Length: 125
Image 1 (cartoon, one colour):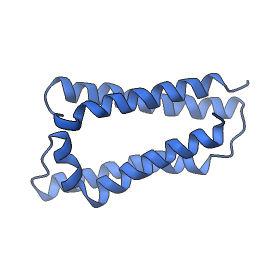
Image 2 (spheres, one colour):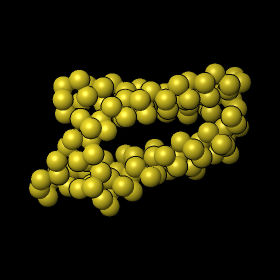
Image 3 (tube, helix red, strand yellow):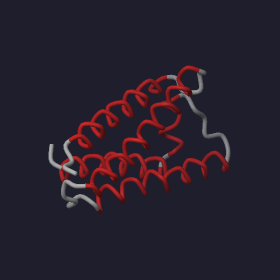
Image 4 (spheres, helix red, strand yellow):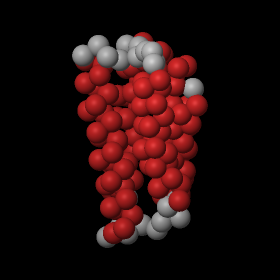
């Protein structure tokens, strides 16, 4: 897949989750077994949207990046971000914080990590 397509897909996925966790956290989190039981939990979900939206913005705004050293650094940064997602959501699943659809987060971040790694390898330096 070329850089533009990859970054469009990556940014689109992050945009959807940023918007969902900002606008409907009380609908989203219970599917993962997590309760939104007060205004602080609601706000923390919205706060998480800052970072998801930031990753989406970086991905979407840099869609036209050509293969090279800068693109390689971008894909390495996205890979690190997604690997952190694998670690944190796997921990949540293993400790029982995430149930229900909770298994999908480590799978999702693993898939994005593999995709980022493959895109990283395509960059010419």
